[in-house]
Length: 328
Image 1 (tube, rainbow, N blue to C red):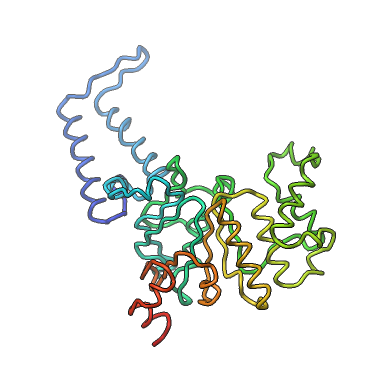
Image 2 (image 1 turned 30 degrees about the vertical axis):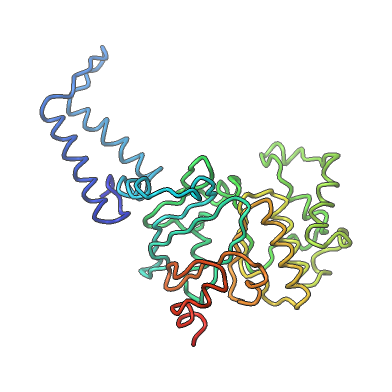
């Protein structure tokens, strides 16, 4: 199972068993040559370790779902959309304390695309973001990032952030004692090495970049105010601005409209729509009216899996969605 993997349980067992059996037969048949290194001769028994140990290491580090999972992903029919896909989550499942939090989830998003993910409490929305950002590792499946086909499974949260994925939680996390300008300055995409941090000095271009992000989030007139002097919506915008300053290729936003006034919700909609012109933006939200304003493709999660995926008008006419989400 370690070689075959747990993705598609039966495929994993079959592929793993076949691999081990074939290699064992090849070695025991004396077909593996002895190699004389002068100080040591590698015999066929040693070859078994030479082949098996790297296989275990490869599967553990680069293919946690095993060769079965790789077969699944490689055999999946590719569509034209796949060519521009920025993130692909394929056949992902995860259990937490014996509870199935995500069940065979498949999700794709392309460059410069805005997507809303909706669902009731417990549908798997937060866990979905957790597995994409590395907070939780899936038990099976594949998470492929960018045109380089990088597997995010096993990568740390910091490495995933550096790869270009930013996440905004429901509760704003900003530097309360620093001004809006200073918050944005600290978030600018720069070398984050120890020496660079110790010797940090703002460049001549930084003020202009900060002014641009502040204008984008509607805080151009609040640069010298601290977060405690801002309204709830403004503080949310500041955190979105800090993420934009990191120049992510994918931005995950968790329920941004919660607790906002009508005017703040409209401004938040404009910020997210504008951000999605140059990057992928996924908005996890329960408020249908806020999602309607986004005018984007909607993914509906239910019982830890995708129930429907289309425009909001189409998914709200889906009888299954009506039954489980709209409650009528």
